[in-house]
Length: 256
Length: 256
Image (cartoon, rainbow over all chains, first blue to last red; front, top):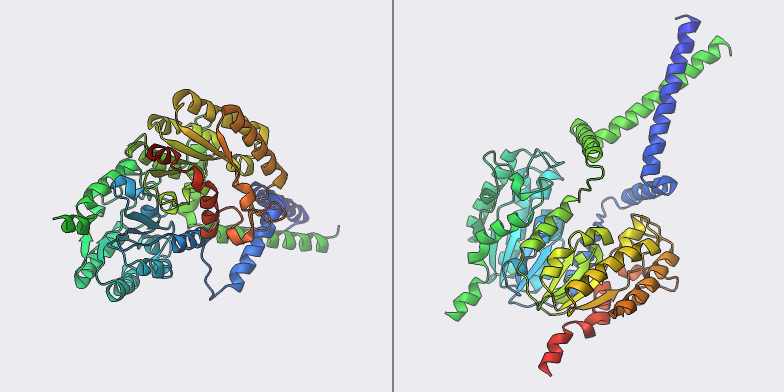
């Protein structure tokens, strides 16, 4: 390598350094400048300090603490799950004031187990459960591992609230052309077939909502979503129509 | 500069480049790999294509479309606002099945204006409005600019649903020691004083919730929040106690 080449290389290399630095600066300033960097570093330190001492997201903490403080009744009809449940106005959709939304966006089977006590305490009339898609999509758990956690939830129901009617709802499809979180449709189908078996094992009603929201490729139909994961109003109307006959079953029975 | 120095510089510079590349690779792979990069590029292209043609976040689109499809009644009591309203289980907190949650996380005064029609159509009994903090914190609008948009909302109420009881609730404090979005407490106080004047101008009841949730430094008290912006169950109980006497006023009046 002659001097000329070395100096050219140095110039190119330094230029690249400058470009990278510039890109990093733009990225940092877009995210909120120096205070953002400090915040991120503190966050990492906090996460390291809390390892093995799981902290839950603020939204989860807030919702959990609110649920603990709200009145409970054994006429409650509990909609239990993650964002898909959380975002539905269930008591309005079904015209039933006993319905209470106990969905928390981002929830997984293990996060749900951590807040099950409040649900068990109320000894509700019915529970409509839909959980597990975040285990699959974000935590990348296998369907088999998810079902193991799911089973522990159903065991708690069976042991502590044996007279509560529990409905095991299928998890829902995603649309891989829109979502940020690509998911093999085969895994979702597999998880649902496990959930169906599990419901049978516990003598709980399994409800297939999945099939009512998919296109011919087992993907969430684009007419039901803007992001490939969550649901618009049309989807909630479909879901309502699938479960309506099960909701408030006891009340109807008591009125006969 | 002698040859030795040039070569040393080149080595350092190349090393730095390698480090930068490594950091970029780690960042990209943590965010979801190559498909993430493609997704981000497509997103940027989409945003460029939509400039001047505002698109709303999927959560907003989904919620708006659900609200449009839900049954409406002139006995409705509407809780209208952003995440702070969205995250409250209002009908349970106040034990009133006429209460409907029409909060959408992330909403600003202009996003609210874009979905006002569904609210106006129902000619509700009451509206409890809390909006504006996202204008201040995320959009960095001045209190004066926010009030201008707020006024347009109240003008719509006055013109189209003149018999509806409207309650203008103060925006709430944040806690700058916890939140990611530092905010000058003076701006929040200023916005609230404008909102109070505006309510008076329209002959609507102003409700100060702010003062019930602050510490001595006009910051959101840490006992009410995990993230410095949003509220836990204890905070919602305080808020409930502040507004309870106003909720369902007409029903009480009719029963006298």
